[in-house]
Structure formats: C-alpha cells, structure tokens
Length: 327
Image (cartoon, rainbow, N blue to C red; front, side, top):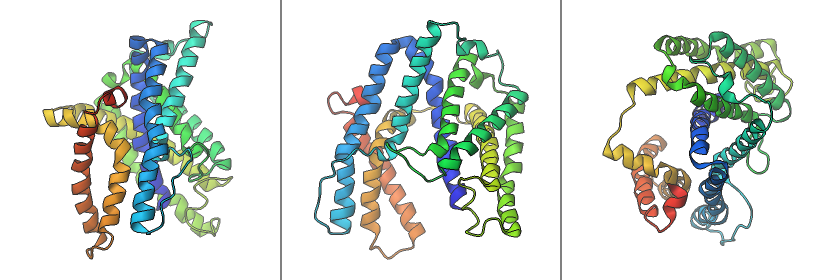
C-alpha cells in the first residue's frame, strides 16, 4: 500500500540517517567548538540547498519542461529545497542542540551524559519510548496527516520520529550504545519485526469489516482522529525502534568492512545525494519512448545512473573549494 511504502521510505532509512547524524554531532562540536561547528553546518548544508533551489531545480525544469513536454523554458525564482529537505532538518536540529548545550552549560539542567548508563537502554525504557513516540506521532497527525507538506518543505507527520532518532543518536554517543548493543537484544528486535510485519494488515482488514473506512483501506491511517491512525502510529513506532536496533547490530557485525572502492564511494556519496535527482530524471525521460517493459527500464537506468553519479561526483569534488562544501 502507499501508506506502507511511505513508512519504509521515510521512517526507517531516513530515521537511521538522523540517528547517525545525531551520534556524530556531539563529537564534532567538542572537536571544533560550537561557533565553528555552526559555521561548518551552514557551509556544508546551506550552500547545497541554495544551489539546488537556484540552479538544480531549473536544470530539472529544462529536462521535464523543455525536453520532455517541449514547453518554453521559464526560470524558476522560488525557494524549494526538494529532496534536500533532509539538510534543512539537520541544520535545524544542529542549531537546537547547540542552543540546548549553551543553556545546559549555564544552568543546573542535566547534561545528556547524565541520562546515559554504561549499557544499552532497558526493555522498560524502550517500551516507554514507543508509547510516548506513538502518542506524539498520533497527535501531530491529527492536524498534519502523512503526505501534507508545509513550508519550507517538511512533513510534520514524520518529524516526531526524526527528532527522536536524532536525540537518541546524541545519547548513543555519550553512552557508547552502538558498541554495547548485544546479540540477544538485536535478536529480540528481529523477532518483534517478524511479528509486527503481518500485523500491519490487521487494522486494514478490521476497518473494512467494521465499515469504518468507507473511503479506502488506507485513508484513515495517514492521520486525523481515527483509531486506524492511532494503530498505524503505534505500529510505526514499534517498528522504528526495532528496525534501527536490528540493523545497527547487523551492519556492525556483518558489514563493517571497507576497501579502496568503498572508501572512494563513501567520500562521494554526499555529492551523489545532491546531484542524483537531475541525472535520474534525465535518463528516465530518455528511456520513456523505448519499447521495453518498465521493470527492465528500471534495471537498465539503475545500472547506468548509479556509476555515472559517482563518476560525476568524483569530478565535481575536484573543482576548487568544492571539498569545503562536499567534504
């Protein structure tokens, strides 16, 4: 379903990115100082957003408007972060955390380090986190359902999970949770995932049987004051925590390796994230008239675009001063 697809796209891997961003934030501030850290964030996050909203969005306009629809080109003068909304959110969370550190250093408010134990969070803490996160998500979605965007390019429906993941990443750094995560804890979360996956369809079936979702099987799940929206928020929150814990352990134990090629790709992945949209759109348009099955087009375009984006990223990073922004 579209609701499930949106969850997997935005909740889990995006929340994982926020978790990792939160984990690396305290050590960056401690190494650079708060002032230089914010300056660095403005450069590394702000400049790509400006370039996207002024240049890349117009390149997309050339491909989609001029090339595909044969319309005259009109330069777009508007702020639009597009898929770089993630950078906006990171910049916002970084500013909030720096301000919180400033307040904590000058008041009696406890530092996050004092909330961290020498082991990973207990089952009780995880359960309470799920309860609070589910309630907060449900309340936000009463007014801002999934799919509703607000300026400057955010979906409030997902932000409770994003903010939670970023903050937990900070606590994980102080408590060294990623290294302390045990096999039995990851295994329990894996079992929870297997149980919860089929349960996603239970509220849908009940909604049809009870006739409480006459407009469609997913319309009441995305938000509003509906029991389906609450069930969806609970399911998401359980899955969010379980998936993150399971994947952290899995990748730490099974995929924690490197090579010269992977190191080169890792150094270019941020640039690829910024430029991939335009390259992907161009090749999608190029393959539109090709008379082959769509699934075959998907694989062909993927095989072309992925290495091409990394190759372009390597060249772009060679431009003078580019590494100041792109790393």
